[in-house]
Every structure is written in structure tokens, then in C-alpha cells.
Length: 218
Image 1 (cartoon, rainbow, N blue to C red):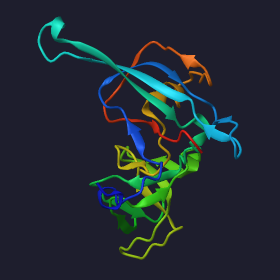
Image 2 (tube, rainbow, N blue to C red):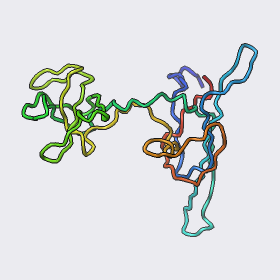
Image 3 (cartoon, rainbow, N blue to C red):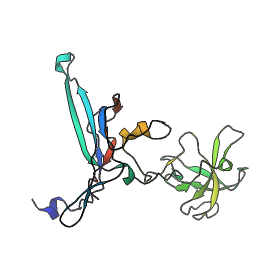
């Protein structure tokens, strides 16, 4: 085995850890920030965050054919390792081509935004969202990239586009937090308990969902 041949892309410590099977969260610890321990050449930083997931499988029809097992995901990145999510970053959903209007009257189409076109939209600004006479919702967005059409639009130009029914979705490179953090993320009001082991009422998690980043050391 040759490292350069079998592993041509170096591991950068950024790959996501995914849940290996459907299950339920039964225990976890979320460190607020990295911990430190003294070492010969200075303090080393590490994370004690973990999540324990219980899985149940039953390949046969009888209870005796069932199996309960656990997976443990350790040294996951702490809470403060994830920067605040950019809630204004959006893109046109796959398979959609959205008409870009110059003003809220929607009488002049300046261009058509293809799938993946990136925009910014601040939902907190009420003037940047409106409901049309057709009952559809529209957003006043700022283009993050140039678009060609009836007229050339540049990054920074503002247009109105339809934003309901999944036409506009959060940009994929927005910060993604572990799926098992869902009880602590908006709109939930549950409080995070940091730096302690918590055994909650079990709640489900699906296979393949993001469980955390292996950033045990900074």
C-alpha cells in the first residue's frame, strides 16, 4: 500500500461524520469550547463532545431475530467550533428557473435565474418580502453573481423573485450543525446543557445525517 497512490487526497480534518444507521439519541455531551491539557511544548486542545446512538434491527418476523446495538461518535467539534449560520445566503433550487423582476410591480422580467444562482435575502426585513395578487410570496434579493438575460445583471443588483414552495433554498455551504442538535436549534426553545453528560428522552436520527465534525484537536 502506498499512501500517495491509495490516498492521493490528504485528510484535512474537515470531513463530516455521518450516522451509520437509523436510530435514536440516548446520551450526549456538548462541550461549549475546546478543552486543554498541558503538554511538553504547550497546551493541547481537544474536545470531549460525543453522541451515543441506539439502533434496533429485526431482519426476521419474530422478536428473537432482532438486534439492539449502539454506535458512539467521540471527540466531535464543540459548540463554538461552528460559526453562526449565515441566514441570508440562499440559492435557486435545483430544477427551478426563476424570473427576476426589476421592481415589485413584476411587469418587467430582467432575466431568468437558473438553478444554483446564489442570492442574499434578509427575511428579517419586512419590506423585502411581499405577497402578490396571485397569492405567491416574493423576495427582494441581492444577486451574489452575474446573470445574463433580457438585460445583464451584475453581482449586487437587486431583483424580485418568487420565494415560496421551495423555489429558494438555503445555500448548501451555509454552516451545517449536527443533526442530533435539532432539539437545541431554532425554532426549538430547549436550552443546551454544556460540558455535562445528558441522557434525554430518546429522539430519532436517520442514517447518513451529519453527526459532527471530527475536530477533536484544534
